[in-house]
Image (cartoon, rainbow, N blue to C red; front, side, top):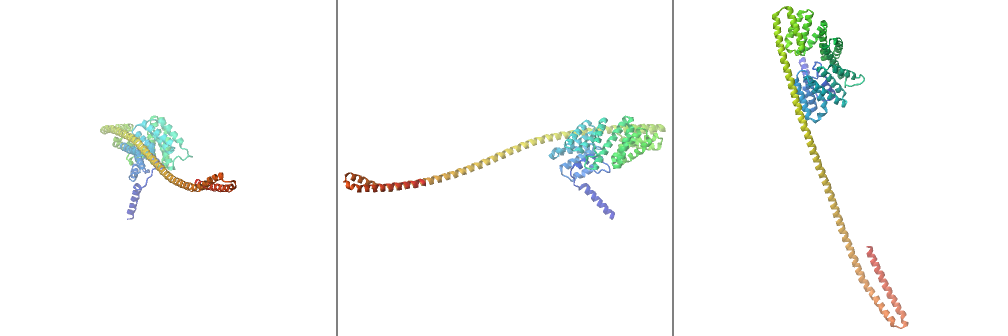
Amino acid sequence: MKTSFLYMVFVFLTFYQGFGQSYEVNQREVIYIFLNTAEDSNNKYTAAYYDSIQLNNEKPEVIFFCHLAKSLRLSISDIPKATQELIEAKSWFSKEESLKEYKQYLSLAEASLYQHLGKYDKANLLMDQSIVKFEESQNEPMALISRSYKVRNFISGGQYDEGFDEINYLFNSLNPDVDVFENKDQLEKFKITLWNHNATLWTTISNLHRDSIGPAQKVLKHVITLAKKKGFEHAYYNTTGNLSYLHYLNQEYESMIPLALEDLSYSTAKNSVESVGGLHSVLADAYLQLGMKDSAIYHIKKAEYYSKYLKNKYIHQIFMDVAHRYYKSTGNLEAAFESLNEQYEAINEIHKSIAQINFDLSKAENDLSQAEERIDLLDHKNRQNIIINWLLGLLLFSIGLLAFNFYRLHRTQKKFRDKLEQMNHSLESEIERRTKEVVEQSEKIKAAAYHNSHRTRAPVARLLGLVDILNTEIPSEREEIAEYIRQSAREIDEVIIDMNEVLSDNKGT
């Protein structure tokens, strides 16, 4: 019961970790996507891992990078599926504006796929573009990783001198005093990747120039020690297989056999049938050279079974030579003919397999080209839509600006009308007030004139009469008459003063 409970807990935790985790795209995760492409037992960053991540995310950048990661991993074993994953990534890239900043990551993943398709020039061009963009953005870790991809492309394309130049540049770029990568794990993974590429370069050179076998063996032994110490499974077994092959080329069979058997165990566990067939072939030859016929026949029989999976013509030729020498030494012509017929069938299968691979590669390349054409068309439409939207936005802005100006003009006009009406009203009131004042002043003047005219008329009449009397009266009475004249003059003067006062008061008001 206790065991069952613990098992249920384990299953729950595994399920939760694989499908319930929250995944965020950041520099650390992106570096792991491009560093950990080999699906080893000690590497959780597999295609299945990114499938589980994608199931629980709707964020465009997470889905985009999951498709990139799966394309990188599947390009080693399944080109058509890897192509479809890259097409999905490119589709997301074309429809999501927020992904435009990740252009260089897409170019690098696409370059890796073209390398596996055998389009080395195109792969190299895309890698160069990625390197430039990463260096411009000062993303030094991804710039170095892009250069390591370029080394792998040089090896696959047979440009060994360029591969050595690039790998030497990368080793010199790793300054121990500068933390280029985010953590030590990433740095160690990158270093072992460089050493693994270096080992592959030396192995390839040794196959062409036998005098390079000695220096190559030293490099491979160093990589094996380093990979074993750091626990990098893929690098360890890949280099072990390369070293066993160098011992085979150098006819050092006793040194070669333990390494080949170790690599054979790993390849069998990984179901890497082509590697298994090749290892059985060279082991059969080694045992035959050492005179260990029982072991030789065991590996010959195994190699015969796996021969149909051998795509490397050179390894297949090794197997045929071993089988021919063995059956010739035994004198068993029936077994030799039977084996020969099997080899012809195997060769036919190889040709069919190569034809199928070429067909798959051509189809994958055609699918990729069609996807690029569709994406270019979508980009063109997107650019057109952006221009149209920009023009519509400009039109709406202009209409809004015009409406705002009309509104301001309307408000200004209203204020002006209100002020004009207020001024008119004030003017009418002022005119009315002034008119009233003028009327009042006029009435006062009329009243004063009427009043004073009656007041001045009597003194003036008396004055005129007195003047007439003065001309006829006797001198003794003239003094009295003069007094009357003065009195009348004073009355007239008082009337004039009163009128001046009235007029002064009206003028002041």
